[in-house]
Image (cartoon, rainbow, N blue to C red; front, side):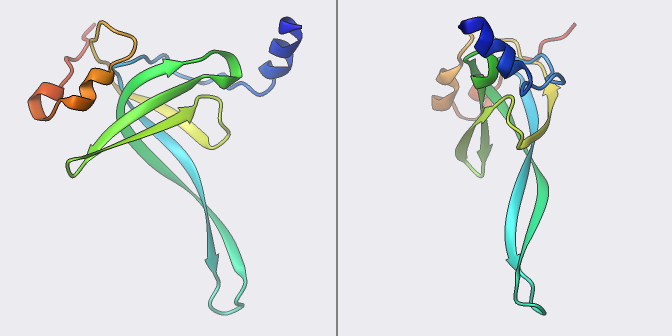
Length: 125
């Protein structure tokens, strides 16, 4: 039964996902659909645009089609976290900006840190 589910899920999985983990800084390009009213015809027009969300990966969880990752960004002193399904059709692409050197798979401890203490060392190759 499990192999049958995996075969069905493979059709919907993306192939162009970069290798990233917790501690990496990524830029996620998300498709956003907006409804606007056309002033001339007074009809609702659907408009799609791509908006980047750049931040630190806190975790990756799950496997297969239900795999998700959480990205944290601090804007004007306020932390914003978003959880994205990796294989979502709303994600146009994921770009790794910077590799981080961390020793844990889930770095939730970074939520309490501010300023220089919230910095993660860069992994150099």
